[in-house]
Image (cartoon, rainbow, N blue to C red; front, side, top):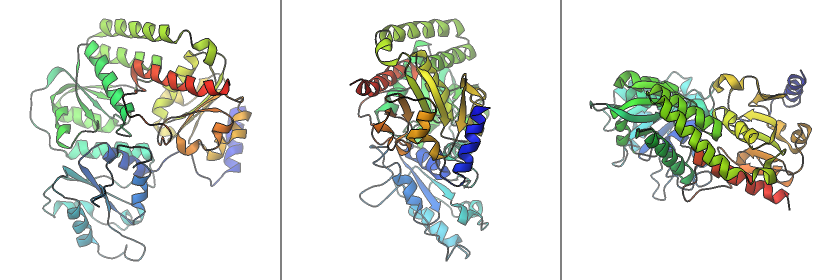
Length: 436
């Protein structure tokens, strides 16, 4: 009852404030950023550029959304309050054609709410323009969705409309669909290398990642996969592709933290008829990781407080990792709508620790974290946009979208067993400063 009362108090204190969430269009831009030769046309004013600039050069040092030659991969129509009610068909078509440069594998199209509500028939415009590149419409659901919806809707639109080759599926080939490649840096290169290592240890081959930083054409490799692993950032896209190709569909969570990765390996192994092999692999890997962490846990982690703020698909695994290290979880909140959360996140992650879904930003002020039980120097896992000022009181790990103060120029995974080691290393570095 106390937790529910605290939430009610926060809502009353910050009824109109910003929430712990990101916008729908940022999710669309993340998906485009993860496909290196795809252009995005947004029916809307020039503020559409700000969503891409939220990522380019700040969150993702390797982003190619903007270019010095002016051929940016995010293009806007320039529709504004003065011209939004007129007939804009030819102007929209002209803008889409501008994005069809030679190096563009495809063009995605979406709209801002002020444009979409005018009833513009985007599908008719696209169908009638005789495009020289694939043009795919992404629904403009900014008023009812968040960044996770934007990312998922983009993948779903591509899965529905992309032409796929007719090829023979390979039994041992696996495609990961719904992977959240939020930047093109070494952390995600490390993630994919680690997931490939795990799959190969099971006798499987990683054939395709949707999206994995590849080109539009390279997405075709999904047609060769005998098994499509549906990650939670792209459930609809995974189901659509499995129906189109006839591949086996396996829905899993995200392999983050030791327990989360173990469950992922065992679920995949069971679905592919490799259950015993998967269990042996998971047990061996957990023992290996535990042996390497045994000496640092008493010095840095044992009985320290922790707060975790992350997207709802990572939150449980991160909280579990903190608990495995002997930490005391004090607060957990998801950067995303409750509708995205798996069932176990619709209650308590630990006794007396309910999950708060997109709470007001006022909930993460220093004094609020102290009221939740965090002491000076305790650990806070949170993204850079929402971490401002917290580092003066707590040990902050910049994690998630966006990440401004932590970048990876070489492989540094956070998923899988190796990812758990890297995450613990970052957490220990942050906590070490508070011991000075």
